[in-house]
Image (cartoon, rainbow, N blue to C red; front, side):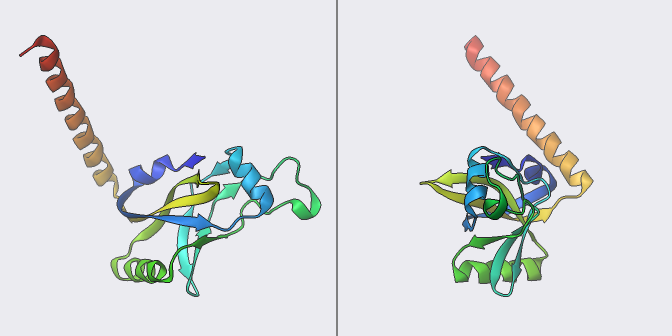
Length: 150
């Protein structure tokens, strides 16, 4: 439904978790129409619960009054207690960030792929791009040799 493409560029992903997400009815309908933005979203553990902030789910066009939702509200993520404890410990001790990579449906339920990530500096980003380009060039030359029969 939605991808956070900037996350893999701005952060070094160390570990990923699949989380359920608690939504209202009109939010589910907006998600099915792919009207969601993850650009500035992040996760945080508060009072022993995992919350997702900064996700914008556009209001559903046909929901009005009681059925409408706040597009920028925080949303509760559903994970096991031991996972919450692990995330809390690693974010505090190692200074890591919780970043949503994507939102998708699995067996009719909305899921969030949440990454435990470390922020990259500008020079790290350039280094990662250079390494990716070098690997791509090696693959191209190997493919060219195979085509020529060398």
